[in-house]
Image (cartoon, rainbow, N blue to C red; front, side, top):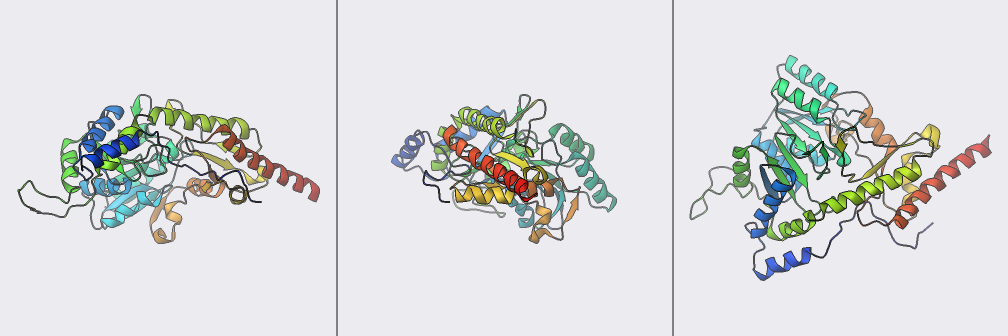
Length: 388
């Protein structure tokens, strides 16, 4: 069946109209490159908004992860413990530097790195004489990780933590924002994120030395000479002025975006959790998620259908959805990597699905999604009853 009422996307960017004013100003001043005035303004607003001493605007979250690992001196043969349940952009920068990822399972409460499995992995590597160089923890779908426990373990074994907060801009535990829990942290402003610069990211830290080095390395490691002088390899990672201008306009409406995405989560939960076999990721006490994407987990023994069935029916109705991340330790390219944990991440991948969650979606559009879920659930129940 083909839907004729318009496609519903998973997480489309939403613009206020203010963005064009910043873009026009940058063009009028012929100030579009990586040294424009909007870049530092955007960095300062990130620092102030999220209580981070230092923020460096970059061209992507992936670049920010790579640069962060470089600052942590990850190199050939070094091991980096990483959350398995994540997008591959979290892990590939380990390979860029010649490192080896050690994957860790998720916990059920947050779906993020399991502290028990993390400590098990650290003890295992230390017993083999291989102290991990760093730990990468992700705040998936906007939900903060178990930072109290992870930070305790990090301090206990003196291993720095890189916080991948690509999906959790504006999320927090208590009054502390994600992006400030790790020794280094990154944000993403990709096209599908809660705020977008088209393509972009940021590196955050409370370490002045790392901030200075990040700025230096992200501009090709050019020394302060009247000509081009380089003593080491750098990267072309700085954000441009056009993107930074868009970021200024987007950051101004972040609270509205979060409020709407949380409202979308509540709307789905209110109308769908009543169905047998359907559950949603809940916030632990004291946690605040930006609800970047609303995620739903199915119990096929109760729903009578699987996530793949729902995705196909939604697609036939012009509605985009997505499976949860396939764990890295199950990816063909990482088949030989070590993994510590059980099957939490794997089960989430098999039984979970992301529902349309864009800030610009209307309740009418959400009702279209909900109707498809109800229809499939009722059809399966009816067919099961008929076959008895």
